[in-house]
Image (cartoon, rainbow, N blue to C red):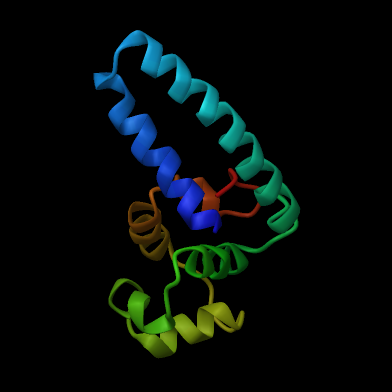
Length: 117
C-alpha cells in the first residue's frame, strides 16, 4: 500500500505542471494530505538513526517488492546480497552509488545517520 501511495505522489508531482491553476491547487491539497500519511508511516516503520545501511537496503527491497535475485547484478551476485542483508558483509561505496540510483534516493540514505529513505 505504501508503494502505491508513493508512486501516486511521484506521478502527480511529475504531471501536475501541465494542469490549470484550479486543478494544481486540488492536486496540491491531495498531495499535502497523502504525503503527511506517508511521512507518518515511514517514521513509525523506519525510524531514522536506529538502522544500519543493510537494514535500509532490506526496507527498500521490501517496499519495492524485490528479491535478492533482483539486486544480484548491481551488488555482485545473489550470495553477496544475502551476505549484506545478514550483516556478514558491508555495502561498498560502489554498491551505495548503484543502489541510490536504482531506488532514487541520495547516497546518504545508506550511510549511518544518513538522510531518510
